[in-house]
Amino acid sequence: MHVLVVGGGVSGLGSALVLARQGHQVTVVERDDTPMPSSADEAFDWDRRGAPQVRHSHAFLARLVGLLRRDYADVYAELLAEGATEMRFGDDLPPTIVDFQRLPEDDELVMLACRRTTFEWVLRRAAVAEGRVTFRTGVGVEGLLAQPAGPGAVPHVTGVRLADGTTIAGDLTVVAAGRRSALSEWLAAIGAAPVAEEVDDTGIVYFSRFYRLLPGQDYPPRTGPIGGDLGYLKYGVFVGDNHTFSVTLATPTVDGELRKLLADPVVFDECARQLVATAPWLDGRALPITEEVHVMAGLLNRWRDHVVAGAPVATGVLPVGDAVLCTNPLYGRGCSTAFWSAHLMADAVARHGDDPSALALAYDDALRAEIFPWYRAGVDQDAEARRVAAALLAGDDPDGDTSDPRTFMRSVFRDGLLPAMRSDAVVLRAFFRGLNLLATPDSLVSDADVSARVLAAWQDRDNRPPEPALGPKRRAELLSLLPA
Image (cartoon, rainbow, N blue to C red; front, side, top):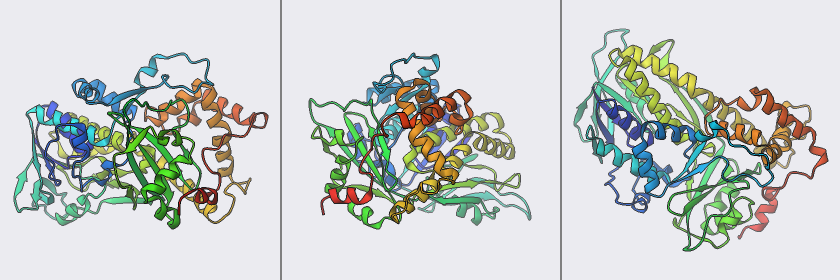
């Protein structure tokens, strides 16, 4: 089978790799003109206008790492050889956890510390080495080719039309064109039924800056928090490859003042120094490697259904990664769900490659069962975050209504889950398994033992000091600490 892959990001490269190793011929069409770098640092300077998020913080969760270690041991070894490092559960525990015992299941709880550009570079190098993968860069796709469909028939895609006027035929077209994908418009142009789409604003604006450790310096101990949520500001630090790291700050969309301030590199760094988890990283041990602060706005949660009323809107075409779903980047799930969806797609191809309709339905079933619950959980979490941020910006107390179930859940999170994670290895393990997409989104509440431990910590909240602040409690206090 000859497969066309539209887009050379994580989902596109993941698709190309898995399909090539299944024995298919693959052509990857990438709009950006991206010559192959010779080092991780050259890759960081890649001109990726079609994927501006590459110079933002990224997490490579255990779900993705597990796929790499299982099916691409050679690629995983190359990532480590190029400077990526493993972060294993149990290696950097809070000092207050004294009863930790490693379990066999902990072997799969491994994250990868790596820049997005380094990850893509190594994946692309591996795809090129496959021999079955051809790259066409510097030209974009502008539409689909399809067999003529009679009235009421489902169109069948037979290839793509490029911006330079040429066409490429293929037995299957995999669209990995990212969150800006025009697949819905392309499908409409060939007479397909409308794609069902659900859209929800994340409510945040994302600010990132990268740094490199100075010679002789080490990363701060990672036994404490790696981020925090102040209600009016969310933040985190992400370890990269080759002695790099990044800091991300996220403001509510409605906070125009803070949004404007944090776009300034001097203000950004000073803000990070006022936050508990990021302050040690900016204490003089590192220098910025991005002069500017990279900003992303217009961030949406989006789910696109390409199977409507039990039938695919078209056959011969399958979307992967952000072309199917986009989630809040703060949760760090994007690369992992992109690579995961590529493999769900390839599994469906292996089982139903000779039946286009069955292929589309099987893939949709897999997405719905495996990944959609994480999309739904993110939408619900963002709705609560927007409510809290709006209350704080208005000067109200988001927990003022004690009869509101959301107030109780926030209390359990703040005064139950967080302290339990610092003292109970069982709770910490359960949290990290969920964070890394190795458990279901509701696993913390559906596990009776874990729930009991969290509630016990919450019920004991009056017998211990208040939870330590992760930064200035009030927005006005943070503003007073920032340079004008």
